[in-house]
Length: 398
Ligand SMILES: *Cc1c(COP(=O)(O)O)cnc(C)c1O
Image (cartoon, rainbow, N blue to C red; front, side, top):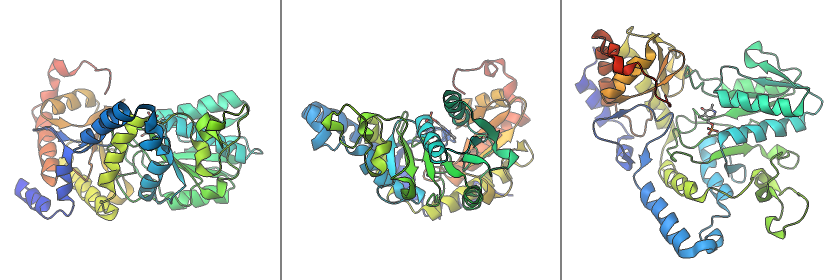
């Protein structure tokens, strides 16, 4: 049986071990929620302070030029691009994932005007599906079909997450992209639960998007990213035709005229202070070997699955290659169990109706953390510590 010393030895031999020191993590906490809100990069506070005091305080409106605020959606997009297998001039950063979904799906529909079916995964994170419903409602005349139906031959667009937020199951990006495109539809990938957790390659996709506050550690409210394949740059339209996507925003022309290239997918004024934290996170990512991240991620999730054993039903795929960097477990009393765990320093989260989620961010989670989390979970279950009534009451954010 695996013991804690074995895990400590794994940590000592971990090629990524030094990265943990680059993050602020509270004492006594095993933080397995990096798939929801990534930890704070240690130097982000100083980077944000500079943006506030030196740039905003010192340069005032001059910061748009001097500090490069105006260009951030594209300059930061270029920094982020290698993490998703994209090149320079292919990624724009800003807004939220929900908005990027709307832009991508709407643009895809306009590229396939003769088709009237949107394929979306009803199991996907709700906002993805909600945004599709809102768009279809606005346009009228569209059918929304569940991805599970497996039929794309009359679809305009398919929207899918690479890694399912609830189960952690991972879709095969190259084969699904090829199938969708062979059927004449366009492929939009949501990378919220894969970027920063594994090597991602969207170079064949038509559109891709995701958030930066999960595995990428850019902080609460950090801007999202949108990738548009260069083959669509000249023809894809941004239905959110804000002034930052205009060919000449400062010409203040009466009519919208889209910018060339990826910049046409910008909308409005960038969230400058949030960009500062994202830039700090990317300072770390630029030094990270992603193949090692994926190798460690698979080792961490496998270790957790093994240590938990049959104490709880495994919702995630048993094969580590078929899942993301999370392990989901099922129990009818999942909510109080998670509350009892958090009370003992092991932070996961709960997704209704009965799923306990544990995310393993390879840059700062150690093998010994996995051991401690599994032992604590078994103790909460064996001693039924979760039955304490203080764990039954639901908090607003689970
Ligand atoms: C986290 C997540 C989102 C978040 O959307 P926001 O607009 O940034 O709140 C969307 N989709 C998926 C699949 C997610 O995992």
